[in-house]
Image 1 (cartoon, rainbow, N blue to C red):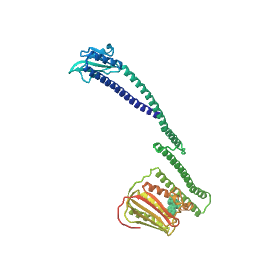
Image 2 (image 1 turned 135 degrees about the vertical axis):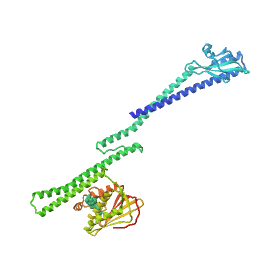
Image 3 (image 1 turned 180 degrees about the horizontal axis):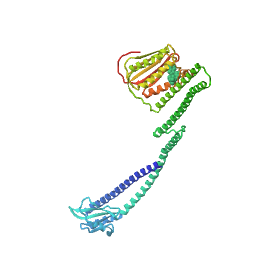
Image 4 (image 1 turned 45 degrees about the vertical axis):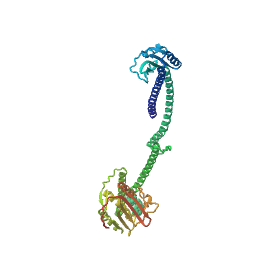
Length: 459
Ligand SMILES: Nc1ncnc2c1ncn2[C@@H]1O[C@H](COP(=O)(O)OP(=O)(O)OP(=O)(O)O)[C@@H](O)[C@H]1O
Ligand SMILES: [Mg+2]
């Protein structure tokens, strides 16, 4: 309504201004034409009178004009009337006006068609350069006024049609504009009330269509997020229930039964193990929640990967050796990347932890660092048990474990890779995986890199 009214006022204003200018231009040019015609007629009478300035010709000219809708008055040089086609009392006051300069082509002596009874011109009659008289021409303004009033009527009709036309267009336009907008408003209120099943009609390829598609997309995304959140919450409660059941069960046994010291210590160590698992899970969940909320601080500093990996190798090698496995790190050049050292360590830790957990004695894990012009690539591959093709797409999902019971036995919560993925993304990098069941697994992390060259091998 508001938009339509505004449109109407603007268009109506524009139309009024345009009509006003058109009207006044038309009227002015019409009056101008009349004056020129009057002057031309006066000049042609003057031409005849200059040749024959006698009573006969004068009355002849007056007679001719009495039949036309213009009038003529012929005077001598003293403005005494010699002949006229109109009652002289009506036009006396125009003739009495002083003619300041005598111009050969004549001049207008009255053009006020609105107030005066006549518009008028005068042409001087000369013989041998001496002024001998004047030809005055008159045009009744009533005629012009009736012409103007006819014009006004036509303008009123045209204006009325224009207004009706404008209103029709505005009603049509505001309906075409407002209808989808109202629908979208309804859709957004529906979304905000928690119902994401909105369906907006398909509009064109214009901005309104874009907006409708964006709202539809938003509803879809929100729905996906809600489903994911619900799934995540039910996974959490499920994951928490298992260790809690163990803890409660064994705590009951320890409290109620008479147990031998060995049994007691065995049950207590199970309780401790489950408590550790719970605390790990809570820590991991807390990390993920912080990454999701973007309150996770990534303090990027230049890191020399050669030194960094050396430390990692020293730290992790004993764990590999203990399980009869091997860890080797290859870095052909000294490479600097900009990253948060503790987060990068967490990424490598989670991947190496998996490599240990899902490999058997005798297997080997290799870390290769390389770089291209723009990227730094960290490759971690193991010769462990690998992951089947069907499972591979899901391993980065939260709580996803290929073999639930086995992974549980190994202490897995299924959050390790989800955290790795989020951390890599938080660094602006990407992670991908390649694996064949029975052959081993290879993770590739690609960071944007700022590098410096120096050939070196260690590991
Ligand atoms: N190097 C690997 N070799 C074989 N399977 C792997 C490897 N890395 C991960 N997986 C599979 O992917 C699943 C998900 O790994 P993720 O690290 O997210 O969880 P987790 O190791 O079970 O638990 P967490 O890391 O939280 O202790 C694992 O359960 C495992 O089945
Ligand atoms: Mg893991």
